[in-house]
Length: 233
Length: 267
Image (cartoon, rainbow over the protein chains, first blue to last red):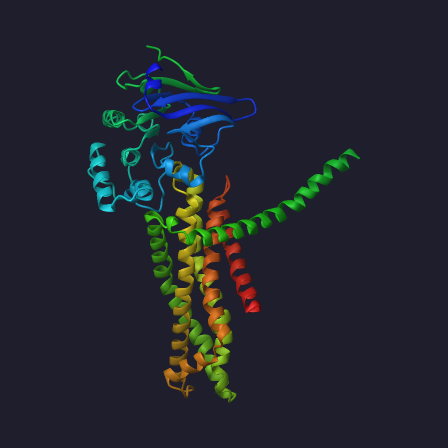
């Protein structure tokens, strides 16, 4: 944790959130630029709630959540949306707009938040798609694409636009896309080297325990919030 | 006494719940309608994905609805326009053909029928699309990526439906008049040339009709868009197309009829 104080803080969570009257989770996390937190979250609903807290779409019951020094609870709605444009996310349930093609879905956040020419955005997305093992920018429809392609496309969408924070909810689809691991590890390393922080939520103890993932922190998401914990090795 | 106290709130709740639900829907319609007007005027709201969604919905609603409108208008032309020409001619009242057609076809029938076609052809699609997104958690994903679902989904649909309503309404009236004229000519009851006939219709239109006709088409189109998007986005847990579509259809039909009647009374 000492290194985090030297780096620019990307995400700071000092918050509590009550899922039920009995269960209040405490979330205490500081992620600096280039840091990588790996969180074991067996319950997908709780993982989604935590990701939404970090991304500012769910308000904390108490405390504060800061992204790039901005408190989600205090920034105006349109500023919060613009800040979320700096976050690359992989969603547990996919988050694909069903009536848009995969290519449009992948490009949607970048075209919305930036003025990058569309052709240039397509080229960058196609390069990233190849880096994640796709032949190019996927052109089909979300419901007609194989789950492996959707997992890779979700990574392309998350990493496109060089985000400051990556929030990855089960990007390997709980082990259903095992060959994505090495490519994702490389992409995370490249993102960290340019100063992005990474928050990876996984339901798989094997992924969480994987020594090949160079996480700076390993945490567990429980009924009572985030707990720092060493993997049992 | 205790049992009375327990029953009273329950009874009141049962009576009040549907009233509150309908009032909430009307308030939501009003607030989103104002929101659309406000956002539509902001250049920042029309970013590339919003413009692309507007073009997509416009293409599907106007392009897809064209053939339905053409067939409906041709049937109305045969059934209403040619009959009006025929029977008014029989009664020696050819001079009021234009007034009758403007009053019945242009002011009342065309906007309502275009609204129904728009609701059935495109409003139902919007309900299914947005209902599926609400149920599938895609709205959460959009918000998580900093994409405002109102701007990305509601604004372009309502705007595209308003433009479509106007476009299809003009096409409807033109096809209905032309078909009626051709049918009347084939029956040998039309004494005027085509331009004379169209001129008679145009002359029968007052200044208020030039305001009411496009106003109704745009308003009805926008209301179909609003009722459809609200119904889709307010899908609750357990809702399916079997529950959403009848709800959206009823709301849309009521909105079209109420809008048409109120504007006719007002103008």
